[in-house]
Length: 78
Figure: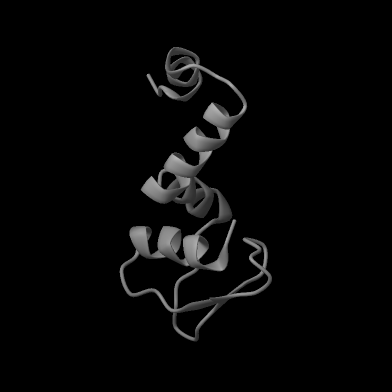
């Protein structure tokens, strides 16, 4: 995870949320005064659904030699 993507995930849940993330770590989020905390599980779910994150994961699977059909079988959420 990167700080930018963690913040993107948080802001996909709550636009304009003001936080500081240290060391690219979802466990090191400091919420600005007055900000309502979003659960780590909600942030993780939002992170997993970010377009940049999904594209990166798919590219890594392709680099490992998986076919599009195999990737689809692993990533389809039914």
